[in-house]
Length: 364
Ligand code: F6R
Ligand code: MG
Ligand code: MG
Image 1 (tube, rainbow, N blue to C red):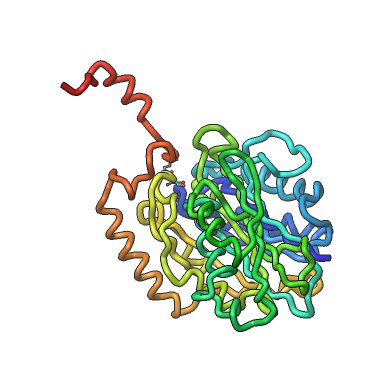
Image 2: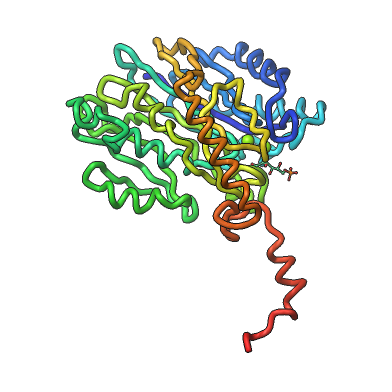
């Protein structure tokens, strides 16, 4: 069995919240080379977030795999502090390691599977948004025949898929099967407080417990109980032969969907698909970005990556994202550009209520 673990954090930005420091990327590369537990690895990034893409045979939630990632992020945070990078150490919420990275501030997407004769995967990295930003694209990939014709014309997909959904506010989970339960599924995942955690194939070609997609769903603001940075998510999606083709997976990003995040984690803006080298969100700390790295898994080795949004076919989506950014920015501090009060990552509302409480009188 092969396990792919993508473990990520923002441990300090260069400059501000727009990018990562090349020395810190080299630190991770050198550090991971020393570890014999991994069959292969790749250090990716999007904006100010670094993602360790790790291949091994230890299964999900393995203490040693998580410990290595945790220690590297913690040491890197110290380097970031030495360099006075911005927000150095911001996602490191705990002082000591407690068996796995859950609740530590690191984000994690993992899946264990039996490698097929050929195993293409796509690893997505997002910056300036949140886990539920994957809801719409994952629904399109695995449940919408207007995006994925394979759902109709590939026999291997005709049974549909099963979605594991997390209720991020109440810490609950539920499964929904498509196509039969698509309306119920959409009823939930249309709401940002629910996030798709995993997708499973219903075809007997795939073992019931083997995920075909997995998303990091940590929400830093909920973990810490106060604002300490956006929970920029990552995801792993398997492709082809009874699953959506690589092109069907990428087609789900052919429109700049509106997502929550952007400036101060408090605004709605368009999600722009970009090559990794262009994932430096600088305009109004955005707009939010998504990077897609394609690998062929080869007995645990990661052949690649291919930077999949580095294609002129995505130029128009990027142009459209810029137009949408111009349009929505004009709304300034008004909803729906600004998030509703209860979802703001920063707020002065309690102070305002206190300062002006005498001014508010019953309407005459
Ligand atoms: C959003 C984000 C940035 C910061 C903004 C203010 O996820 O990270 O937009 O919120 O740059 O940052 P501070 O409060 O650190 O000055
Ligand atoms: Mg940041
Ligand atoms: Mg970030």
